[in-house]
Each structure stands twice: as structure tokens, then as C-alpha cells.
Image (tube, rainbow, N blue to C red):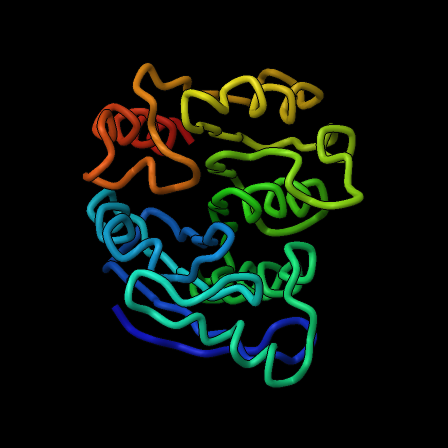
Length: 220
């Protein structure tokens, strides 16, 4: 893992962890959930590496200190008196996509979102960006003033979606307007967990979620 920095679309400096593999199958941009930071992926990014994918895990400005790590992007935003709501993190993910695209030799990437960043990822994927597939955990109507389900009906790339068992219906509702040929929704039988933490080894049933994610990656 290598710590790197680059600028958001509005000039704010972003901190990220870069997990590189030799001769990767592709590149994944990993975006964290609310009240969190790039350390959400300290356990899971190496597992994506083992599947053959390099990863870039970013600190978005909407987050906090947790898992023994500081959200450096959030701290800079506060110091500059910039807003740090969910939607305010949009330029961070946009810049992350561009950076991951560059690191991937200008080939389309896989965009992975967790909770509010899953919603932002879906919203961005309806535009012309270099993303070949989406993996979203606990996608929901998390964005104030946005009807996500209505906005994302034009998505035309493979989408893998999963969530905690209690969030299955909410996830299906958000994805309902996307052409079904693009959507794979994995519905866990165990309770699972909100966001990408469903992949953590401390969460019961995490193994079967990894099997489903790996199958999706193999298919694309």
C-alpha cells in the first residue's frame, strides 16, 4: 500500500491509499461510507488485489476519523470552511475516477461505492465517465433533494449490488428503473452489514458475499 495525494475537482487535496498489483486485470476505485475514511478498505483491498485488481481507496470530504485513521480530506475541507455533506463529496469521487483511470493506463475502471458513496457512484455512472462496471453496497436514497431511482435509469454498464438483509427491498427500489440486463442484485441470507463492511471477516456470511463479488468480476 502506498499513500498518495491528488486534487479534487475543486482543488481540495485528497488523500488516498493505492494498492497496486503487477499486471492487473483492472483498477477499482474504492469509496467509503458515511462517518468513515479510506481505512474502510484496509482489510478488503488486499483481497481485491488477490483477485487481480489494483485499488485506489480515497478519503472523501464527507467522513470522519475511525478505524484508527484520520480522514485527511475531511480535515482539509473543514480547515478551508468547505461544506462536507454527502453531495459535497461528488467532486472527490469524480477526481478519484480520473486518477484511477490514469493509473490504469487510461482504461475504464470499476467504481465501488459504500452507502452514500454508492448513491453518488450510481448518480455519476449515468454520465459519460470512464467506468466499465459498478459495485455498490447498501445503495439507497441517501442524497437529500435527489430522487436517485429516477436519475439513474439511463445506466448502461454492469452493476453488482448487495446490502444487509434488512436493506434488500430498499436496494431493489433504487435500482428498479435500470434495464434489468445490467443489474445483479445479491440478496444475502444472513443479516450482513450496512455498506462494504459486509465483506469483512468479522461479519457472519461474508464468505458467500465474496463468492458473489468474485463471480461478477469474472463475468465482466
